[in-house]
Image 1: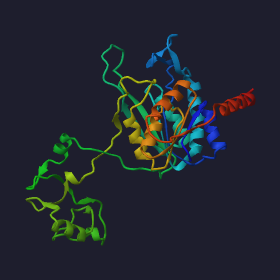
Image 2 (image 1 turned 90 degrees about the vertical axis):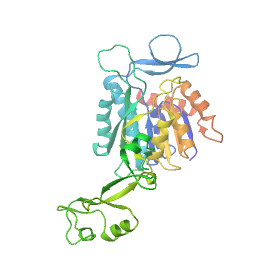
Image 3 (image 1 turned 135 degrees about the vertical axis):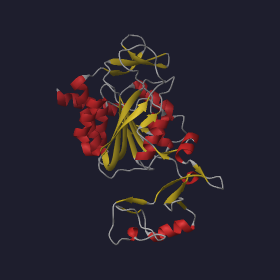
Image 4 (image 1 turned 90 degrees about the horizontal axis):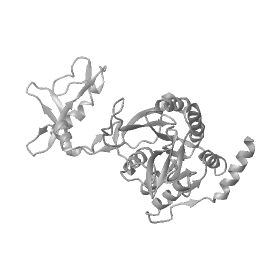
Length: 352
């Protein structure tokens, strides 16, 4: 499949993907950053993106005027189509704000099943603001992460340790100057007549526990100097800092928005890199049906994924093409606009 950029109302574009180019069950990753039910318009003035505006100045990049039940129904219709398009190993990340996000989660529980809810990720979006308001300052929004099944693509993300992490997590230093820590070699639970319940160096695991591995492996660790014995004869496994890939990524992400965006609500590309590298593989298809300025699509391209972007805004399509043109190569095939004008007319006739 070639990369695809579609200028269309996204529900029409999603039906096109399902019914005309047969992509049902073939999308491995969906990231969407839909409107947030703010009740306003987002504009572009003199090439600079604005915040929400109800004034008549500037060109409207997109409208965010659906609120309440109308907004939730708007989201539900698109989620149902996205679920059909997702593969059994697919994941979806929906970026939303704190005012409406918890209502959207209920809709996502309904569509994808609460058993497939994985994370409510907090995203730090900006620096603290000092203006007065009734309530605490808001510096975050949220990302709702669901999978289609219990067997999604998952490439364990790691982040580098900081110097403070090294000092805290690996407080010991050996004679060679290597930082390390130690962990117990036993775990909760007893086993009967198992290899993890036999004597090691003449000692048994504490009552109610068992060795984490078989005694032969423990003997090998001890031979290699990977067991540290306390003054009371308690063995612990040595973990060296320089052999660890990094620490697990947690559910608070500090990826602030660009300071001078060219398109409203433009997102940090590092945020998209993390999502794409974690929940898709090379040549997976990544879909963003609210593609805005094309950050998702560019990240997918740079990370060796196929991609599909949909947006109905002229400003969004222009911004996306400009962003993609900073990458060398034959990136995408833009579908003729008249095709979707025909589909829009057909849909209007069907609902008349």
